[in-house]
Image (tube, rainbow, N blue to C red):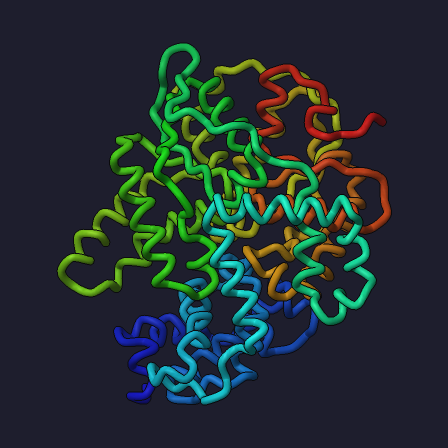
Length: 458
């Protein structure tokens, strides 16, 4: 490897990961952007080739940045790869390279930095989304614009052509407030206690999907868990980590680790697939840290990651180890399609547990979409930064879900819920409700009607 690449890969870990790729092409049919465009450089294999070239001393050009930024980061390529290439490590590191343009930190070609418009959009996103108070302040004007019909106007007016990011933001923002009041620091178990769990409330989740957090806490408590909600927690760093902002992600991660360490819980439950995936990566994230102070943080991160569980994953383990479900289920008679969130199905390899939970609800008819679990186009902030590609993937997802005849779509990730709801609303079809799996279980536990999940009579 050329000495130029040293600052980009000081320990040689990226070159080692890239060398595992044998160029077999098994990743191609699994990759949504390759499905869209059929372009080799917009496939995992092509992107690994570009990354390898940079690590060998080639400059990071505008073309390289374009292909790297088009990656959804959905990780569908990872279970398809027979060689076990750690593509997540490669793309997360490579996404940070444009931030180094012009700094002399590596072989980044002058002028190859992202455009001023792109940098401004990213700066606005990361100055807002990880901070619930700021995001909540933005939510009001977004809803006011929707009430004035500006979201519909933006989809077909000049904004759609000249400011697609703004049009996408207006299209995706939920129309109703997700605020349900602040959860208490402790939600006690109902009946004999089976576990003490910490719950991540998230940033986007708590602002737009407060009801999901409330439902999550109720379900866990109904199944015999004391639920601890650390009041000092904030963003876990998932958006930053998956978008090539490692220093920012590290600050959020360190705070999250400290908050849940103080909570003294058996497990940390995440009800957002992207957040759970990122927190499970903390151990690996710090594995290559410098010696000294970071060494102890790396050990703490490994211990923390080992206690992180997705909501469905945790319930499956609880039932297996503590005698099965405790809460009674009531009927929910609806054809229901489950959407595999990419960072749950691909990154965490959790597919069966949510389906088993849904099949345990009397009357619920679970059906599968015929798209093989292809990404919906949300992908963190991808639908804001690459709105055209995201919209096309959203349309494909909506068509696949329509094909099931489902009246209810269930997801385990807030971004997916926003993206799918917007795509279904835009296609002119019959109303289809979108809900989180925790909300569906909560409705069943409490004997609520389908209308509580937004399902229209039919």
